Image (tube, rainbow, N blue to C red):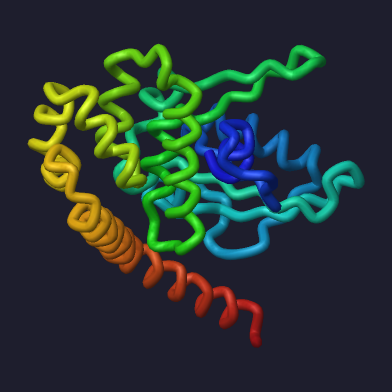
Length: 231
């Protein structure tokens, strides 16, 4: 669900860790614990690996010690802001088959874009590259779903203006929920560029608000851990 998926989709060259969205149910968590044990993965921060924390939207962080992946960080989540539940994500997944027959399941591009709408600076250039890569891959033979996705998520003014001109009915429908498309329909590059910056700022602010109570809970957990360790 993170940088590794972006690499797969051609929007990044490398990633230093592996991020996973998981189904946080007892049987599945036991399988995950077995995999982490095999990787010799140790928790490196709060919160603890606990189903309740995952359901509340926290990420749980591990560092692997197995010789074949020593130092690799693994982060797991189950709930993300603005992103559908795991069963819906699984239904829409993209699957990559490796040369040895192993299947690697990725978030679909639209779901990955939603997951990347955070307050972090590094995520917004990635969103732009993800949607652009999808556009250039499918622009010669797009489905209605592709066109709808591009109109709702592209962050490149030139491409939005091009799409609004090519698909005016779809653009008119999409601008009911993404109002900045009105500037794309009018071909106003400057106004559209400004509106995209405002859209990004609004998403960043929503993410900050979402994380405020979760951060307070993490701070309380850190204080409790320090006190229990007698430091």
